[in-house]
Structure formats: C-alpha cells, structure tokens
Image (tube, rainbow, N blue to C red; front, side, top):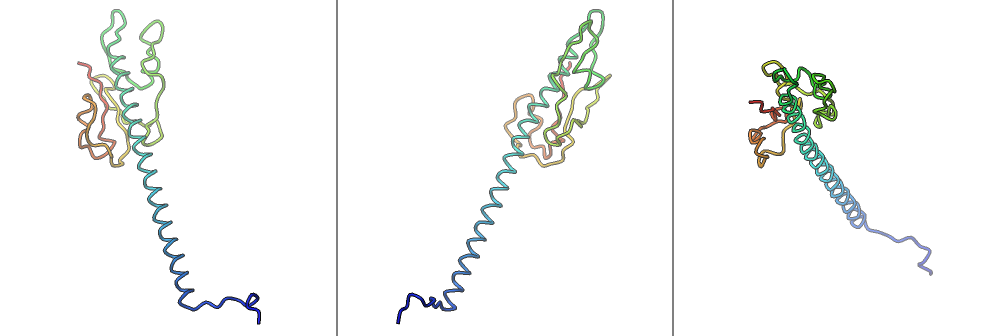
Length: 161
C-alpha cells in the first residue's frame, strides 16, 4: 500500500502543543508591540518637552526684548498681549520681538497661560497637567524647574529688573 496519499495522523498531544506554541508566540508579539508603543510615546513626549523649553525660552527672550527696547521719550513697559511681541507698534517702524505665536507643544494650541506683572505680561506657562519626565539638569535660567511635577509648573518668566 502507498502511504503517500494517506493523511498524517497527529496525536492530540501534538495538536495541543502546536496551539500552545501559537498562543505563546501571540503573547510575546503583543507584549513586544505594546513595549514599542510605550517607547514611541515616551520618545514623543520627550521631544515635545525639549520643544517646550525652546518655545518657552523664545517667549521669555521676546518679553525681555520688548521691555528693554524703549522708544525715545518713553519708559519701559511690558507687553499687554502676546500680539505686542509680534508687532511692537511703539516705534515708527514696528519691531518684531517674536517671529510667530508659537503653539504650546504639549497641548498643540496657542493657549498659553499668561503670567501678569505690573502693567503687562511677564511670562507664560503651559496649560498641560501631564507629568514631566525631565526633573533635573536644566539650564541655569530654568533651575527653578527642578523637581516640578507637571509642565504647567514650568513658568517662563522674563527678568526685567
């Protein structure tokens, strides 16, 4: 008799072992995929964190520039709105202290919380209540950010003394 045309007979143990191997493979694949998703999320948040430091510093510098730039015969003042940083109309030729109104990297919107000082805006901070990854090793001007829990606690204030 020719055995080539007859189907292979598997034992129930062999079938169960194959099923177990497939389930273990699926479990490991799922765990690996979820780890990759978490790694990507962490990488994205760290990139947004770095962008927040850059953008916040742009606002801080622009406010300081606005305050330090004094038209002839006028005293130093703080900007009354963020638009004043885009186009300072105190001069005959408008001055730009900020290139554009940057969105908050953490929220994706230009919905900054304004820090008011005597007579105008002194700084900005994010509305985001996400937990901050970075807690140490900030530049000198941001040493106050050390050990802050959320991005909303990172307040970018211009020193106008």
